[in-house]
Amino acid sequence: MEMFFVTHNEAKFKEAKQVAEEFNMSINWFNFEYEEIQEQSLEPIANASCLKLVQENPQLKGKVFFLEDAGLFIDSLNGFPGPYSSYVYQTLGNKGILLLMEGEKNRAAQFESIVAFYRDGKIQLHKGVTKGRIIYKKRGDKGFGFDPIFQPFESDLTFAEMSLKTKNLYSHRQKSLRELFNSIIAFAKE
Amino acid sequence: MEMFFVTHNEAKFKEAKQVAEEFNMSINWFNFEYEEIQEQSLEPIANASCLKLVQENPQLKGKVFFLEDAGLFIDSLNGFPGPYSSYVYQTLGNKGILLLMEGEKNRAAQFESIVAFYRDGKIQLHKGVTKGRIIYKKRGDKGFGFDPIFQPFESDLTFAEMSLKTKNLYSHRQKSLRELFNSIIAFAKE
Image 1 (cartoon, rainbow over the protein chains, first blue to last red):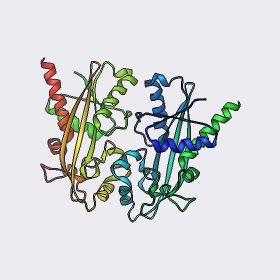
Image 2 (tube, one colour):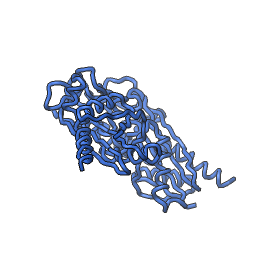
Image 3 (tube, helix red, strand yellow):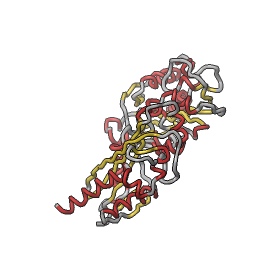
Image 4 (cartoon, rainbow over the protein chains, first blue to last red):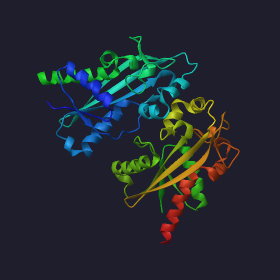
C-alpha cells in the first residue's frame, strides 16, 4: 500500500520514516503546508485539516495519507502553548517559555501528538502523549522546537539530547504513529 | 438597512454599537461563536471566518453582517500574541505578557482590528491600527483582554482606564468600524 505523510516539517517526516521502518512499512513525503483551525485541543484541528486537505486537493481523494499535529501543554501555564506551539516557538522561542516558568516549581508538561489518517473517505485519529517536565536551562541541539527544554519522566535526557532512535523510544509522536501502524496491520489481517 | 455584528464578545458589541450611533446607524447583536483559522496576520483569518459563516449558516446568506478580529502585536516579541491574543489572554493573562517583557526597553506595540463586512455575496475588509506601548504594571479595570497593559501614544491612560466613549476616540476597533460605516454611507449615496 502506498502511503503519504503530509507535512511541511522534514524533521517530523524523518522521525515517522524510522518508526515506519520498524513495521516494515515505507512512507512517502508529501511536502505541503495546509491550513489549520484555531482550537484549544489538537483532535479537532487535525480532523479539520484532514477533511479540508481532501476537499481542496482532489488529487488526494484516492490516496492513503496521514498528517500529524503536535503541541506542548504546560500545566502551570494552563496548557499554553498547546495547539499554537509552532507559532509560539517562532515568536518567543525556548527563551520565552523559560521566562514564563521562572520561579515556578510545578514544571509538569506533556507533549501530545495526534495523527489523522485518511483512507477510503474516512478519517481515523490516533493519539500519543509523553509526560515530562520543563527543565530550567535548555540542553541539546537535536530535534526541533521545544525539544531542548522538555525532558520525559522516563529519561535523564531532553528530547534535543537524544538521537533520532532514542527519541523514537520516548516521544509522543512515535506513540501515535505506532498506534496508526498497528491499526493498519490489524486492518490488513481482517 | 438591517445589519448584524456576529460576535461572542459582548464588550466588543457595546463598543461597536456606540460608534454606529454616531453615524445614526443601528446594529444588531448576533451572538455566535465561529471557527477561525491559524494565520500570522488578521486579514486572512477574518476573511476565512466570514466565508465559512455564510457557507455553514444558510440563514445568513440574504443578510448584511460583519465580524471583527483583533490582536495585540508586540514588537520585541516578534508580533506575539498577534492573532492568538484571545487564547494567550486566557492562558497567560496580562501577567504573562508583563513577565515576557521584563527588562525589555522596547515597549512598542500595536492593536490591530480587522472588520469583515458581508453584503450581496461579497466580503469587504477594513483595518484599524492603534500604536502605543506596553506599560510596566497594569492599570485600570474597564475594557477587556490586554486593555490594562496597553497605552496608546496619544493618551496618558491605558485602554482599561478609559470610559467606553474615550476608548472609542483611540481604539483600533473604532477605526476599522468608522471605515466600515463611512463606506456604507458612501455606497448608499452612489
